[in-house]
Figure 1: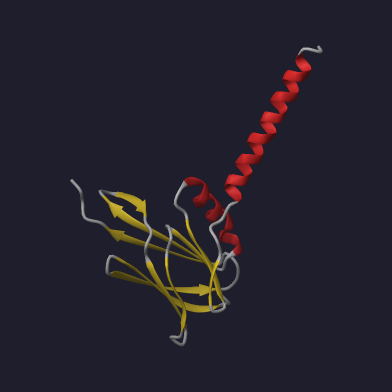
Figure 2: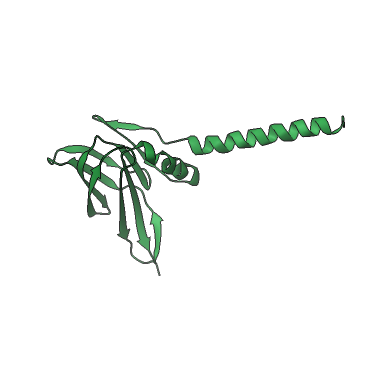
Amino acid sequence: MQLYRPLMVTALAGALLWAASMSGAHAALPETQKQGNVEYVTGGIGLDESQSLKAAEKSYPLSLLFARKLDGKNDYTADVKVVITDAKGGSVLTATSGGPYMLVKLPPGEYKVSATLDGNEQTRQVSVKGNGSAHAGFEWNAKSTK
């Protein structure tokens, strides 16, 4: 029994360290950015970061997702120029996505979201009511490589 105790302690310590590293990997969000009164976070490149952003969606009133369709498959994309305007046409946010996800803290209201990739603009109307209430997806067709 004495021989097994150090082995069990080592195994338990290893399991605890592994569990801590796994929970920490999912907890790290990209840095929050601020423009005027609007806070936002953007990213999602890599599995850990994308899982963190998906988990954080419920804390942000607006979530945006960007993808490019190529050969019948959706590939997440970044470097999308995003412009959000309020119901009166006033600029609320102008930013470039650092990944396929953008989470934005906006007050309740009606907004127009314009997203531009490679000169191709798409627009969505969104109604923000509270945290996690509004979602908009943007998909662009890419030229086939076949």
